[in-house]
Amino acid sequence: MTTSSGIALAGLREKVQEQTRGKSPASEAWRRLKKKPLAFASLVYILVIFSMGILAPILPIKSFSVQNLDIARQYPTLEHPLGTDDFGRDMLSRTVWGAQTAFLVATLPVSVAVTLGVLVGVVAGYYRGWVDVSLMRVTEYFLAFPGMLLMIFLAATLKPQIVEGVKRIEPLIGASGLSRTGIVDYMAVLLILALIGWPGLARLVRGQVLSIRQRDYIEAARAMGASERRMLFVHVLPNLLGLLIVIVSATMAGSIGAEATLSFLGIGIVPPYPSWGSMINATYPYLRTPYWFLLVSPCFAVASLLFAFTYLGDGLSDAVNPQTQ
Image (cartoon, rainbow, N blue to C red):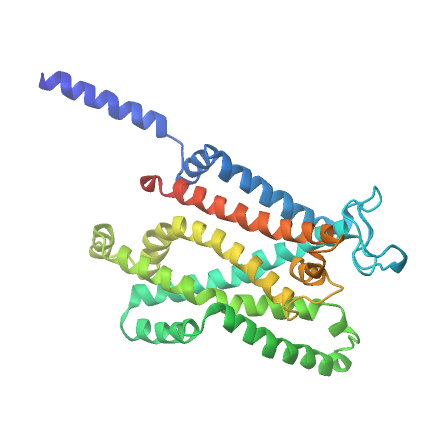
């Protein structure tokens, strides 16, 4: 009986090894994600929207800034499928270029925030002591203010100072008119989003690192004389990857929503440069008028993209942590 049980167990082990041979954790997570239709469809939708934004300069669409008051607030036609706004600008073009703004705020500030948040969280959680106390006090100063209020405060105070500073140095660097190109507005908004995005991430990473630090394989590696660099890059950071994937998805959605909020309030990306938030600000008064259709495209773009990130985040959470299913 014992022999037959051992043979059966060996056969089962060999079968499992054969099934998992050559499959990395990333490929397994991808396989599980593809089995979730809603999450996978959300990923495809996000990629399509971002691709439209990236390719906006070469797509066969009208200019987002050309005005024609003769066709202001025009109903959808073959020439203008989504109609035109108050200044006769094509709403389809502005919606597509707004996707480029969404792509920028979902990648650049999130990259900075994730890098800074992971760095602070890992260092604080792994080394602890006075390093942990110092870094967490700085983090708590940022978290002491409600995120939305802090973002509005920075946008209302810091952004004008940045624009004014650029105007002063324009003659010195030979870039006259730089402050009027919209680049400064974009950079100021991206900087603000990066500043408010890292503290919460740092707290989450620190908590995870404190948990990982107490596990048996960390103690075993330390007892075997593993260097600090090896401990961090081989044993700590790889175990944060699943958490980071989910957090990045949520942070990207939050960054898009935050930029839309700032632009809606008039302290983010300002017209004529396209932003879904500023488009909603310009068209929401028409909600109860015959021109309500002008509000549809920017509202749908923001809402659908945020919902897509929500469903993708749920799917990624299950894909990278199958035990939670």
